[in-house]
Image (cartoon, rainbow, N blue to C red; front, side, top):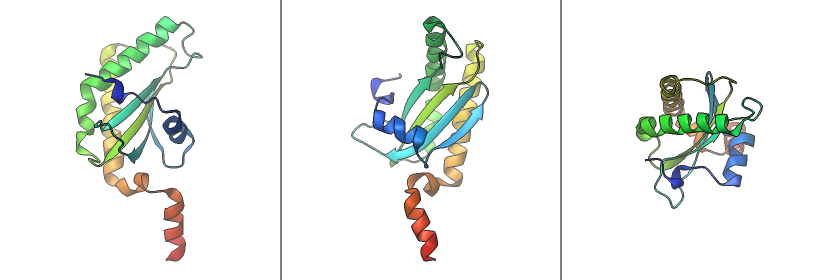
Length: 144
């Protein structure tokens, strides 16, 4: 089930995600995933997500809502892929739709799976890169 706790609602976290230096991005057309790790808060969820479908791509709200529903459902079915990474951290992900055409739910699910696998791959190859403050890593390099 996709619960309310799994939705990214915090304006502060959203600004950090889109404006921060710690966030990374992966693309699988027609979706782009922007992600970063964050300290885990009171909730017991491993990941919080946001789904964005720009008005520029779909003029009618009905169409935007359909795409958002497809993305959320595909994530709900495949969120167990993220279970293997960062047990003590929380993952913050934004899925952004970049196409102006509708896709089948099967194709959306395949793309979400691919994105989640690539996120796990990026996090497992360099987990410390996303979790530490970039200014601290600069200080560490200058001391050496």
